[in-house]
Image (cartoon, rainbow, N blue to C red):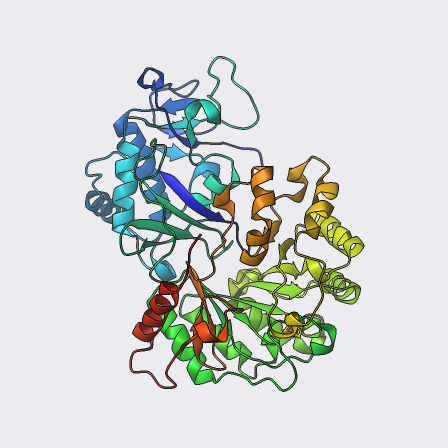
Length: 510
Ligand code: SF4
């Protein structure tokens, strides 16, 4: 198995820690029964190792049966096991609750993806694949588990990338670049996303290395050019102001339908000030009801603090994955902190409404943010577990005229802040593609694995300006490279796919 890319999304106790491992050396593949084992198939806290094929498949069958509980009868689970090539497998008696994963399902959570489960079962059945069990409270000197380096490849252990592969990957779709295929796993709850294949797990090269996909995983959609905060942002690359136009609801909903048909996981609404679109809630609801994770950017703190907007916030909470607040100056930062203290989604009745509060994140353009304030923001984010996305400065729109000190200046501040302890940031810092491209040389010097970032706009995502009905690689794509969409299209889904392909044909991918 190879992971090609990890994106920690709109973003973990003391208990069992089971890991799926690959052992290259056949002499080391020995089954070790759980301590005090009495012959049953309960895999809990005790140290154990499974290489026996029936036992491993029994473990996997437990995960499947556990996931299907309440949805499928035991007979139906047996039918499912047969479909995915696990006929007659005896379901293990127990897997500790801290080590069970949700089994990925198709878009909207509708049904298992049988092809994925077949490949997963075949992977578990491999001789070199084993299941290591234990817990994080006690080191067993008699049966020490091997280190990640010794095992050559760790899969589902405690590191953030592998842990989230299944624990957060509740949705799965097969993707292709026209030549190769791979799996993309996505978690609506966390926004985490992983591209992977079960092929060639121990080869030095995976055999395939996807650089783009034939349909987007994510679409940035501009729904308005209107923004009442223009006076704060002399650099606004979208050139937004109070003259900006709103996109038609008809166009937006039509495109959301088309994107849902293609299992596009997320749509990030942008502007302008998104919340000022007259049909904002209807747009969120439409995307959400079609299975898309709807996110948006805003600077409209008033809507998140005022009592008057409590019903509005309740609607936002039902339909939104994550909200990014633009914070670039002292005034915005103070408003953000006040808003967080007031708990904007505190009114939600999680039990009655089955609604979880949207993730609240900050986004900042370090090039325009004073260094001392940026340092304070880092402190605040780590103390309060708030994710901070750093946006590269874009020299388009009003950004053309603006003199900025460069995109690299934040790195020194982060270096000083972490002071040799990178984990101080708790995976809370993210960068956009512009920032990643500008910082690539520095990332290489620091040994940052490229699996953690993206350099190419348009490779797995696209931008749609719904106010002018144009599609491009990103929100800062040159006008001449944008592909015009029809005002009224017979087949919006196909039109978007064609425009996406046309846009990608002009890209030079890194
Ligand atoms: S940067 Fe954002 S908040 Fe500022 S003018 Fe542009 S759209 Fe409005």
